[in-house]
Length: 297
Image (cartoon, rainbow, N blue to C red; front, top):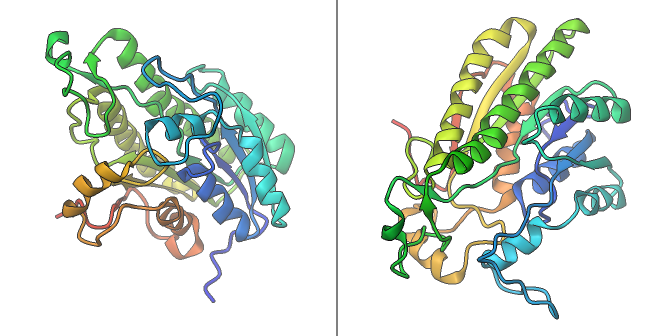
């Protein structure tokens, strides 16, 4: 058996409250290796266009299911890890608040000790466009996932960038500062992006903010290498986190050579690899995890 060298390590995973999500799967994967996992979460506000039933849980994958899952507490994921014999704690914070980065690392360090692996997974999706508003009022003008789209505003831009690029940048900077001050020589940062980062029509602020995250990641890899910190990116194709309906899946499958949408565990395994001892000489790299839906030349 390959030993990734993560036993007793301290891992911080952001965005870990959706029980069917990538953050939860990643936290469980690290815990299964004996790592101590601190889970950040934030229960998102449900958009007005989502109508959740009051009398029964949503059963089938859909936007309604996704947002219902996003309202769950990260404490549930931490409890599931503890029930399986692992070590995990959770804390809720809005990463759009610039002060959250320092407090999050403070709390993780107080709970388990200095963080050695940082996984920036949390994201805020903004469904905005450069098209005029009237182009999105024809009934069928929505994103591929069915989200209503509005014209880009300062607010939609700022919400996406605050969580998707500024928060990871602040977390990386504070992680590096503490790492250097303690004289440590081993550290891992893994940032989660999207294969739409190059340009994401109908989700322009989301895509651009993830592209910025990729730029931050490569700069951090260059600067932090001498401190023994590797920085890598996992870029996602379509992963079932509760939102991919049967109809949407049928539309997506022809573009996926491996013949299925992704599972959160597929991504968690890639993240675990980048954190492992086996990835010790890999940094500044972007890995597409999408069943071959995008192949890097």
